[in-house]
Length: 188
Image (cartoon, rainbow, N blue to C red; front, side, top):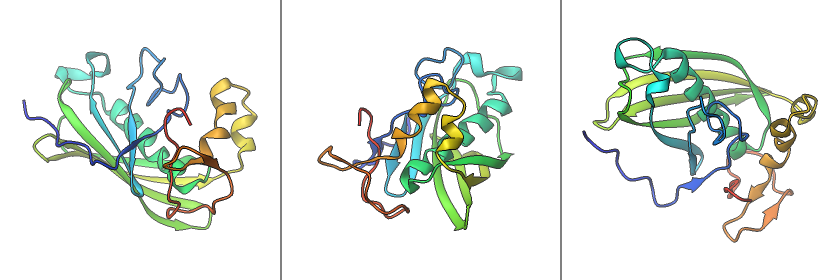
């Protein structure tokens, strides 16, 4: 089996959205457990989907692929320092994704128009073939949107928008936008 190329040297591991998040939470036994990295203004995750994520015939269920894409591009909100929610997600299934084969997922901001954020994601096999892609529209919201649900993960959303500098100090005074020179690093 072909291996994925090494992650870029400047990749920074980001905190999960929450411990029980289906896409990235380390404490969700049914979840995908994505570990997402920031690379410049983009995000990436390397994943080999588990047998628990299978649909028919040993390939990953399309709903799991959609969830992975949605979760991945949601990490761009850390880069943008803007809380937002998914308005729509369209996934193109281009080729079967076999269970257990490594794939690199990448996500990027396509455009921003007022509160509307348009994002794109793709999943590439180790041989470079794009097996699935997604187009998502998010709408920015106030942090209170997350706080009102009362879950520990929702309450933690407020702290996820702080920016950790390379020297590991935290600043809440940087202007929002994709040019912010830091990221939220695991443990920040």
